[in-house]
Length: 266
Image 1 (cartoon, rainbow, N blue to C red):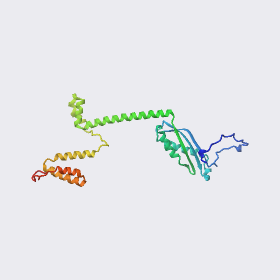
Image 2 (tube, helix red, strand yellow):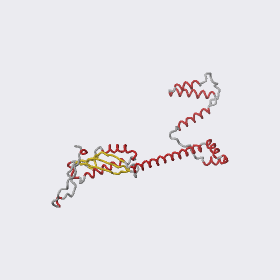
Image 3 (spheres, rainbow, N blue to C red):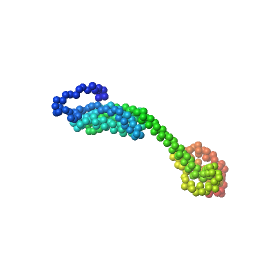
Image 4 (cartoon, rainbow, N blue to C red):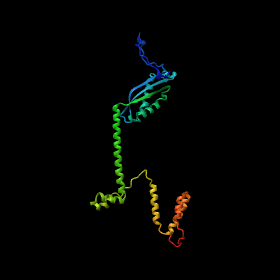
């Protein structure tokens, strides 16, 4: 029969002790199994000052040949279940009670081995006092408010950094903000000369570099002969890459008539 299904009867009167030798002075170390319970244990959540209230109904058993090694096995079993619960619940807030209870039960439903030959397991239920839940909601609100304020500060700083790192934007921004101090633009340029554009982790900076490179390349191509050399090289590259549609578009731009061999191709 499962230990969880057993009902303990109302205890009767203590046995009569006829002499001091009959008085029990130590726990019974002959037992090999028993029930272990934790009720109304307050264990800290991820926010150490806010607590779960934990209830665990469990059982323990010990190998018969090792039963004499444990003076009070239920204490060791209860300690191990409590520490398992403590470590698990420290990863959750009391606003995540269902998830915390599922993970805790998954951990302690498997037999734990707190000592050689001694095994414990159990089923947990979690509750949260109204005072703890109110504190958790207030703490979460403060965190959210702080996150929003920090994000707002970072956005303003990134906006200002982007403006100050771009000479054109910086000039327009300064004239708009301080039209009476246009003469200070040179001093401003000197003061912010080390400011770099903000780094956007979601932005493809390599693509920007390639676009700038292509723009510079096209600006350096000035004669029809240079255009033709570039387009032929481009169509060959697109063909090698398998970009058929782009290749046809580039080939359409090639001149149909012969070019002047004496033209400047430098």
